[in-house]
Structures are given as C-alpha cells and as structure tokens.
Length: 311
Image (cartoon, rainbow, N blue to C red; front, top):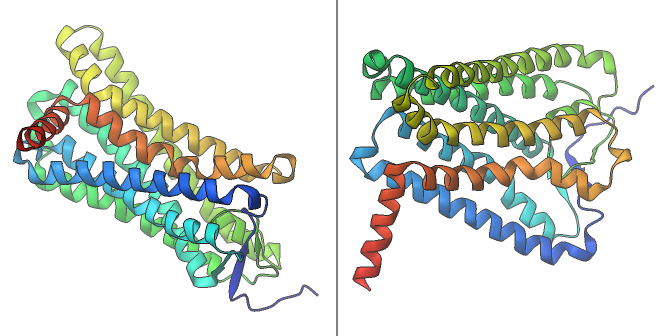
C-alpha cells in the first residue's frame, strides 16, 4: 500500500547545490528583478500616459509587459526569500498558486504574441480593414481574453492536480511546476485525466505557435513585393519575431528538461534552464520594443532630454 499522507508543505530542493554561491545569486537575482520592474513599468506608464500610443499594437504591448510583471512576481520574491533562508519550503496551497501563475504567464505570453501576429497581418495585408477590425475597444477585450483564457485553462489543470493523492513532498525544482506535483501521485492511474487535459493544453498552444509562424511566413512573402511593406515589416514585425524566438527557445529547453531525467544533468544547468524564461523575455522584450519601435523610442528620448534640461 502506498504511503498516502496529507501534504501540507513541499520541500524545494533546487537550491541545495548553491550553498557556496547564494550571496552572489541573491545579488544577481535582485538586480535582475529590479531591472525587470523598472523597464516594464516604465514602458507601461509611457504607453498609458501618452495618448498617441493608444493604438492596437501598443495596447497589446502594454498587456505583454503587464503579463511579464505578473509572471516574474510569482517567482522572484519567493526565490529571493529562499536564497536567504536555510529551509526551502512552500505551503501546499502556495505551491498550487505558484504553478498557476507560472503556467498562465507562459501561455498568456503565447496568446498575446498570437494577437500581435494577427494585428501585423491586418496592418500590412489588409490595411483598409485594419481600423474597423482592430478598434481600441475590441483590442482591449482581446488582450483581456488572451490572459483570461490561459488562466482558466491552467486553473483547470491545477484543480485536477489538487484532487490527486500525493506520497511525497519533495520537488526537485526552484519553484512549483504542475507536472512535478502530478509525478508525486501515489496512484499513477489517478493522473490519467491530468495527462489528457495537459496534452489538450499543449495542443492548444502548439496551434497558437503554428498560427504565429504561418502569419509571419505569409507576411514575409507579402512584404518581398513591396518596399513600403518591407519597411513596415522590419520596423514592427522584427521585434515580435525576436520575442517569439526567445520565448520558443526558452520554453523548448524547459519542456525538454521536464521530460528528460534530471539526474543526467548538473543541478545548476537544470536551474538555469528552468528560470531562463523568467529572466530573458521579461528583460529583453521591453528593451527590444523600446529601442526598435520609433514612437516608443522617441518618447523615451524626449523624457531623457527633458530631465537633462531640468537638471
């Protein structure tokens, strides 16, 4: 008979091999989180306060940056606390909430990138219909839906996980991951429905990715025949493609690591791969859009110039 017990806390063992480097990791992590807060909040405030940026593409960018703050807030405060603490534990409910935040953040990123791809398709390939289809009100609702739908899908996965009886409280990660919790089940047959719903979720977001790739391939084909469209593509689509590649690269490696045996790899490598999607995209995305998109770039330059003149 499996050792069924009521799990009230989980032990996170991902930091066990970092005892000699925790002060350095804490400093770098705090610096990283502060950078994420500053660059994302700055661009969100610029987009909200500047009426000239109240356009569909910038509304989606604002949602993109907000989602970055949402996801990183679900990880960094707890991670920084663990670096200062000799015991790395998290409550059962806290673990489920963290898993919900991590997964819904990642899926929302992909949903928003899909909306951006559709926005660019309309702007370049069907410009006469663009403003009627992508009105401010409709884009705002779509942006909200791009967060709500992943949240509900992942919440369903987490609810199914909460019904599984667990025989261990040991998670070999830096943070709580839904599938890592499911693998602690006492009776594997209880997790069949979890596997089915997880596979459906994966299929949904693979289709998101395929739609994004198709959209940009179609845009590339369209833009080669027009110098004006080529300029539009280079200015507005290249940042989107960069964000997509960064997201896919980090997500693919983390997914591969989840499926492969973690014992075959050093813990430090596993840790970095696990959190790279919480480091690279939240920092790179605001910098990419801030420096590449002319309107945002001009606004940032204007603010800096104004402050220099005031001084």
